[in-house]
Image (tube, rainbow, N blue to C red; front, side):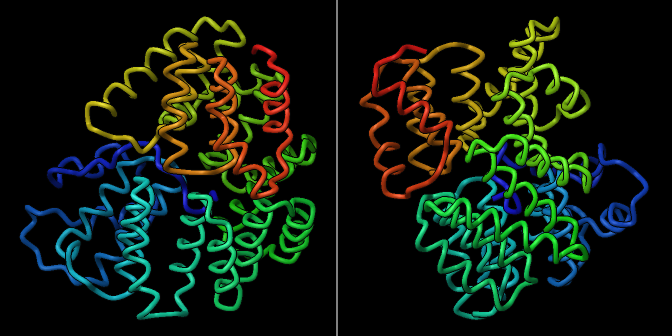
Length: 380
C-alpha cells in the first residue's frame, strides 16, 4: 500500500539543530514552520506534546512522499521525550508509523493495539493496522481492519483499503472497478489519498496484465504529484516489464535520492547499455554497503533485486529474497523470490510462494509466468 510506504533505509537521527534541515528545499510554509519549531535534545526548550506530534506528522508526510528516511528520523527526534511513554492514541499511531517504515511490524502492531483500545474510531490506526497485516500476508486481518476504516474515514480511503486487500485475494476485477468508481466521485479528496488510489489501481491493472490501463493510472497519480516516489517506482516497474528501459531513464533522471528509484534507474541503464550504468550500479552498491554496516535490513527487497538483476548473483539473491519473504508477503516479494529461485535453479526454494499464491488466489500474470517456467524447468 503506497500510503504507508515500505522502508527504504534506516532513519537518520539528527544530532543538532544545525543539521536537521540543512538540505531541505526552502520556501514552503510547512518547512518554514518546521524550521521554527524543530525539536532537538540540545535546544533546552519545553515543547508541548501536541506541537511535537504536529511536527512529527509533517515530517512523516514528507518522508512518505519523498521516501527519504531522514524525515522519519526527524519525526522520531520530535517525539523523543515521549518515545517510551504510553501516551494518547495519536502518539502511539505516530510511533507505529515510524516503526512500520523500518519494517518493525510487530513493534508497530504493539503500538496500534492499545491505541485502538483507547480510540476504536481512530481511522489512521485502523488503516495502518490494515497496511501492516497486508504486507505480512495476513489478508483476513487486513480486510477486517479495512472494514473498520470505511465508516470513519473519507470514502476514497476506505475504498482503496478494501480494493487493495481484495486484489490480494482473487478479486482484482472487482477491486479495480471499485477504485475506478470511487476515484470518479472523489475529485475533491486530498492529493495524497488520490495518489494512493491511482497507484493502487495501476498496480492491480499491471498484475492483471492490463498494461495500458495500468500506465494510465500511474500517469494520473504522477499528474497530481510528479515526484511521488511510490508512484514513480511502480510506473518504472511497468516500463521495465514492457521493455521500455530508455523511458525509465528519462522518467527518473532527476529522481535518484530514494534507493528504490536509483535501483530502477540502474537496471534501466544496464538494459539500455547507458554510459552511466556502471556508476549507477556502484552508487547503489555503496548505499547497500552502508546500510549493512548500520545493521539495516529494512530494504531487503531492493538488495535482493539489486543482487539478482545487477550483480547477477543468483544464489545470494535467493538467500536475500528468502530472508525478505520472512518479513513481508506482497506481490513484488513473491515475484522476486520466484525469479531468484528460477535463476538459481532451485525451484524447491519457491514453495512458500507457491503455497501463498494458491491460498490467496491473487491474480498476477508476472508471477504466473515465473511459476510456469519453474514448472517446466526453463532456465532464465
